Image: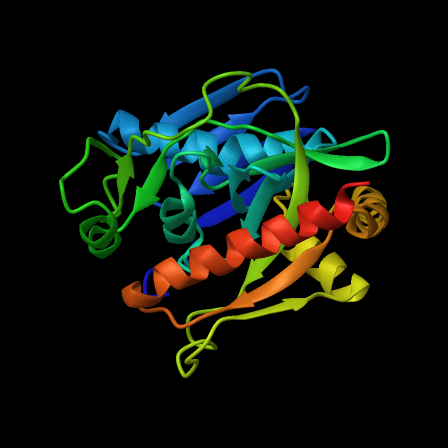
Length: 269
């Protein structure tokens, strides 16, 4: 909020330039087959990697017709659950709290969703959690293996022990979506609230938390919006509000897993 725009996107003919201010430009060629990076000064490779994986590629894949959600996701015994929310709303912390034997990390920041025979599936992405120091200290007091994330952020990338390694490119059944409330809206809460989203609320959540490249492509946006409306009917979705205090994290993860078990039980014949 105190540094001005972070990303600006421009189109020239059928190519795109994504400008991350004071960091780098990424130029996507007309057929999407090539991406050129032009750094502003000695930008660390870790920052380039982050921008490419978490900002550029999701938008390119979305432009090619894939549904790319700004979400963290874990694989529970009942199926895949994903957490939608803005940056800083706690998606990674919640996913980190859920990761344990029997619950594997699928993705930290971007989930590709596909429809297969009338059901939604998530495609695993690279595994690794990006957490702030206070979350790391609370969740992993034994100082786990950490990697650099981006030089402008305090976050570190955590190598996760319980991450999906087998069949990591296979589609996984998507069980439910959880839309996180903003930390400000949850500041006065003293309990966990999980409420079903209406069809309209599901559509708004999918629209708001999906990556886009070209906001001037009106036919493409209209088609995407209609498609999101269809997909929103295929997946249960819930709002998730809870006190943003570390002491509440265990209760939140237990409540989410209980809800996932309940949904999976309802789907069984």
